[in-house]
Length: 260
Image (tube, rainbow, N blue to C red; front, side):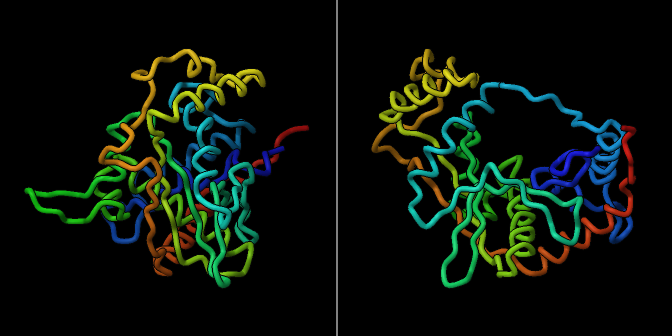
């Protein structure tokens, strides 16, 4: 049987591929067809194509995600262990990190804990062109222009907004990209966290033994803040566009029944 969650389904983390266009107006671009075919391969295999791995960037991000969340405030609800499924489009899934509700308006949030300082800076710095600031720092426009995964992050959050909206019946009009890099003064606490996590089998022991310069961190009292919240509106037009793309791509998914 196919997995009820991510295997063979479009997910928020990869859905940016479906937003690409070909030469003909309204057509899919090559990344979209590659992504659709990947999902069909998973459907034929009945399992994920990629293997799980414990590379340093992944284990680092997974470890300090909770630490970042703890600094956000009680208004946020952490949901990074829960996969959402669109109630009307069963092959559309997503796993948001957190959300909050203010006066019946939902905000969807995604946390990024970059392993490289280059990546961190590209997320929180302004977009500058020919010496002029085009988009200010902490704007989603700067992220989309500066960072190699900027479009991926934007459409990931937009996709999760669509899913949460469909499931709750409440409007999700706001998105937040939360970028966290610890101060140097936080590293000892993170090492203690890594040591405890390692006892449960998580591949984080390398963090416990790494020296300060081997771990991404910021200088206390320096230019950058450890927690950076990039807030933005999610236009209805973008949600409608993404839904239409998912529906069209769904027509190209194979309906596979695995042998018992």
